[in-house]
Image (cartoon, rainbow, N blue to C red; front, side, top):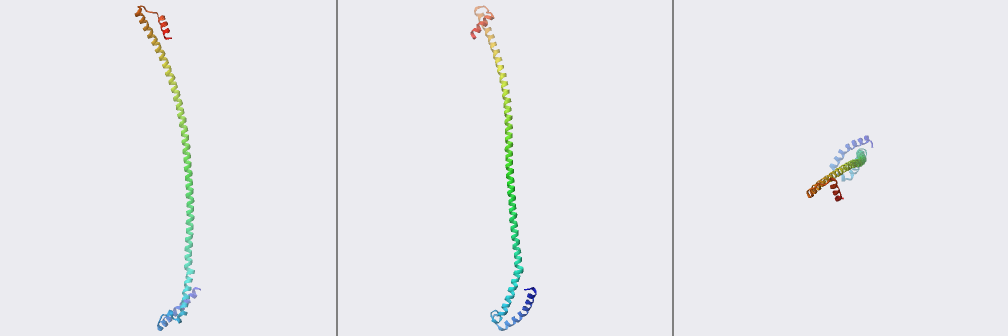
Length: 189
């Protein structure tokens, strides 16, 4: 139905309603239960049904469908956006894990290089210390040998002097240096 035909139908019906109302008041009882009013009630039922159907089909349902479609699109967009954020988060996590692994590998490499360098420095220091100790030991052994030699000479000199003094005291005669050396050499050998 067109808008014009609906409008004319409403105008015609509005003129009939007061006439039907006056007829129902004079007869008494409920007008909707009177068989004489059934055709007008069916007429009005059809008019309001058609009007309600037309409003639902052309106004309410398209708007409701548009709102539902818009909501469905928004939900789909939200799901797409959530999936994109998830992909970005996974990519960021992968980049973070890669950076962490690279940092650990770099730290391990730096530690290994530092350990190698320090080991080399320690070995070099140990070698220098060993050389220095060997030189000090050699010098000390030389000093000890020299001191022992001097001590042996001093002991021999003291033994010679003591032997000369003892022999001179015992026999009142001073022995010669060669005789004392020969006697001491025969005793020490």
